[in-house]
Image (cartoon, rainbow, N blue to C red):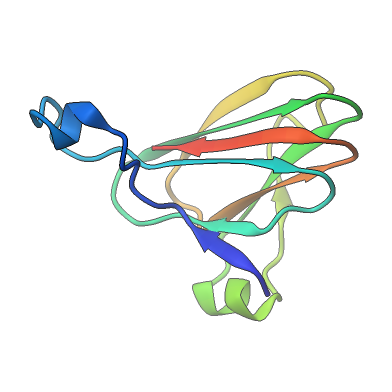
Length: 115
């Protein structure tokens, strides 16, 4: 199963240059058309922000609380976020009690995860 890890934002100048914030931000952005890959969420911060912006059709966020091994094996079960399928820009803050998130769309969609 293909998946990605939410990585530190290496362009986070507030953290890298002067450490104006106490921890580095994480940022993931991709264009999804169909079912995207799982994005593994690192432990740490209490919340993460997710958003979708479909250019056509609809999109939704799915999350899983299954073990990382299930995500890697392709057997993780996705649960639909509370907003369901949306046709326009939608964002939400989720508790960092999830293993991974992904975007599922019927057309080209900008998908973003930050924490």
